Length: 194
Image (cartoon, rainbow, N blue to C red; front, side):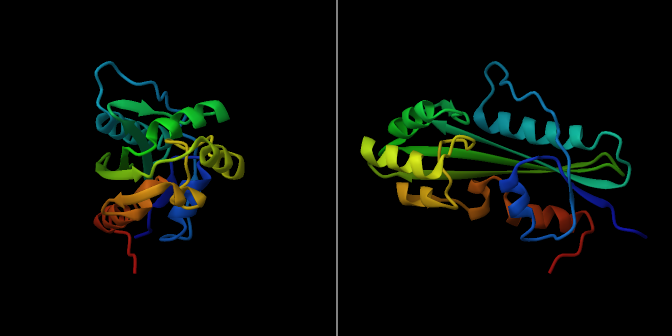
């Protein structure tokens, strides 16, 4: 019996780099998912809905595949921090996060095209930012350009210097793909990992 094709339903280079830590051979497909929030949707529910939607969209036309979808939603005091896109928005997000806790909900879906089954997981990470001066924020943005990252930082890079602590079960979740949970879901789906 042949193994199913493994597909990452994302064009994110960060998620691809993470996935390469545990599997060498996979394809990437753009899911083309509408990421607009729904009314009264919690950040956790939004992340989970989008992870499932991305996995299913990337699975379109595949019949013997395991498709990974993932989404991360950052939340500060009940407000969602989307990818900033501009230095000005990144500056505002980091200034608002200074000295405060930011919650990250990183959802994962492993969609099996053979059975239609979805295996899901949501990681909750709490990041405590240290008090940041505007000069520190500006230097950080100039050096790291975190404009495509929820919360305006890259914890795998210089962004780690912005924190007092990180509380979570899986350090890879904050980067965008919870590898501990993904390894478990892949084993449950019959993929042998070390």
